[in-house]
Image (cartoon, rainbow, N blue to C red):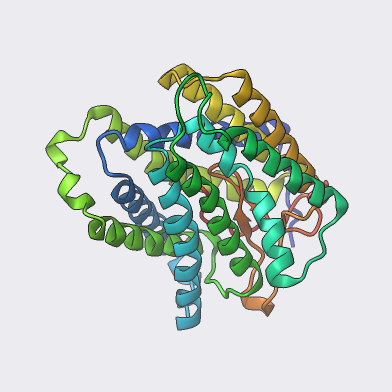
Amino acid sequence: MAQQTKPSNVAVWWRLTVVYLVWGSTYLGIALAIRSIPPLLMAGFRFSAAGLLLTLGVLATERSTLVRPSRRQLADAAAVGILLAAVGNGLVSWGEQTVPSGIAALLIALVPAWMAIWSRLAFGRRLTRRTALGIAVGLFGVAILAWPTRGLGGHPLNPAGLAALVVAPAGWALGSAYAAHRARLPGPALLASGLEMLAGGVVLVAVGLLAGEGRALHLTQIAAPSLIAFLYLVLVGSVLTYTVYGWLLGHAPISLVSTYAYVNPVVAVLLGAVVLGEPVSPRVLLAGATIVAAVALIVRSGSATLGTTGGPAAHERGAVAAGEALTPTRPDLSDDRPAPASSPQIASD
């Protein structure tokens, strides 16, 4: 067997930069897209289109080696996709109607805390002192943002929007826990992700129509910035960057790849301030620093990862984390060995 050539630092870092910038910018993309596209339908169309493109791409390039997914695999992919895309991303898109994109990114950055909580409640994994401290610090950061709901540059924060953005990462984390511990997902990685996106996207479209968003959708009135942002979310935020991230999981140290969890919310806050004029008050800066510190504590403790079970069918895969990104499911994120090829799952945004 030929020995795999170690990639150059340039190859690793340009891909990591793509993950930093693109997944950090998806919050801005959502904010622009929902200006003239109803939020649930926008998210549903986005994931349906991205899932279809990924699935067709895998079928076209790897048809000769594909194994037909079983009913169990299809059902599990649908369950994971509904939790990640429909619950997680749908609530982010809905919440950003009333909450600035940078603050949304800070709240979603706490996905590792929710993953640690689910790993304890659902799977009995012991929380280390560092993890418990990280969760407490993260909750304190949320409290800085959410109580009271006024004071961010004089603009009120809508309680319903805040609630949606607190629940969204819990949904992603639960989907990640199920993917890691119970689900039997089809291979290869991008096929699983494509099917998950399709399932979540279809559910979002259905919920959006039931919520009456169809009456608010007027194709001729979609503004150019919204359309461009939507296409960016589909083609760059999902299809391109999922592929890049999957490559990183197989060729770069996990401790390096996981740094996106700290960088993405910073990128989101800066873009929201520069492009949308969102206020960045001392309170936002304090909350942001607190939440990023909490994420660092949890990720470095290794408790944000959930491990995998389920035998050969439960191949190693990534789980959702902050921003548009994914946290590899490994027992120790401080391990500097290159990660084996993993199956990325749908990410937050």
